[in-house]
Structure formats: C-alpha cells, structure tokens
Amino acid sequence: MSNQLIKAVLFDYGGVIADEGFQNGLRAMSREQGLDVDTMMNVARSAVYDSGFILGWGTEDKFWNWMREGSGLQGSDAELTKRILEGFILRDWMIECVQQLNAHGYQTGILSDQSYWLDWLNERDQFFEYFDHVFNSYHMGKGKRDPSLFHDLSEQLALSPNEILLVDDIKNNVERAQTAGWQAIHYVDKEGFLEKIDNILKEKLF
Image 1 (cartoon, helix red, strand yellow):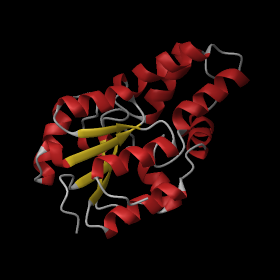
Image 2 (cartoon, one colour):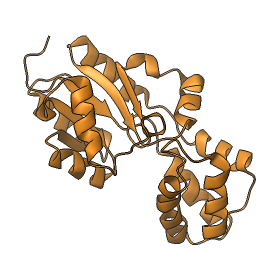
Image 3 (cartoon, helix red, strand yellow):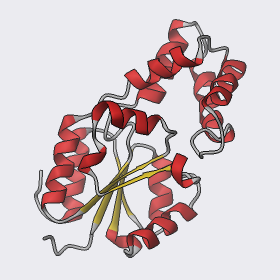
Image 4 (cartoon, rainbow, N blue to C red):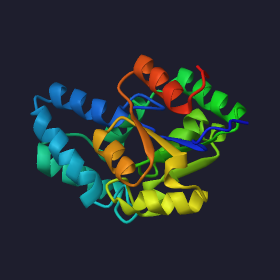
C-alpha cells in the first residue's frame, strides 16, 4: 500500500486510455468529404454539449443532425457513429499502468465526458473491469466543463481534492481540476506521462 499523498488516479478515456476516436474521426471525415476541419471541430465542441448528448438529456440523432447542419457532414447516424467508435482503440500499455496502480493500493477510475457510447465501447473491449470507478458525464448529467464536478467527485470518493490525480489530454480540463485542488497531468504522449506520474507519486512504478 502506498503511503504517498495521492490516493486515487482518474483517467480520461478518449485520448488517454484509448486513441481519440471522436476528434480524429471527425477530422478524417472532414478531409474525405472536402469540409473545413476547423469548422467541423468548432461545431463538434458545441454540439456534444448543447445537444445534451453527453449530458444524458439529448439524443444521438439530435447530435448528428446538429453536426450535419453546422458543418455539412454527410452520412447516416449509424454510419457516422460506427466510424467514430472504430477510432477508439484501447491502449494496452495504459491498461497495464492501471493494473500496476491497483496493485500498489491506489484507487483507479475513468472520468470521461462521453455518451452511452462509452458503455458500448466497454461491451466491445471489456475495460471497465480494470477500474474501481467509472464516472461518465452521460450518467452523471454533468461534465468536466462544470467546475463543480470536481468537488462532487471529491465528496463521492471521500477524499481531499489533493489526494486525487486526473490524467486528461484536454488542457482546460486539467486546469479546472487543478483549480479545484486536484493534482493533474496534461497527457501529451506516453513518455511524458510516465515521467510525470512517477514524479507525482514519488515512486517508480512504470
């Protein structure tokens, strides 16, 4: 059992636990359909929240309609969803890191702004079993853009904010977590992540 300050490590899903299927998929489809990539990504950043799809009160068809109207994206809901989900490829080395953390007494969890697609991805890849907690915005009704989320989770985990470490590939999420008192790593690449987490945990695990 580790006696260090950090008691729980929470990982973002897309871009950390798995390759970023959502953003990479939309960028690829933009190029294939001759659409403006920047416009596509701007529309997507609004649509996922404003449609309510990743907050549990919106629908998949509402989200894709928003995307088609705002960016010119073409394709049926089923075709577009299939393309996005195919891009989420689980990183086996990251799952090994999670197992190592579990073995050393740390709580581990997923903290993801996702729809029910995360449940579908787990049915496909069976990765929830490696984590003590799965926090999904779709089921919580609140995402990482809401600073109060971090306070809520500290209470739910019964931990002080500085006992929780977030690993996320979106800098704004990292900054909001840090403002709430959490420790956080901005994930950029494997090598940088492994170096940073060893430094924060103050023990060589990886």
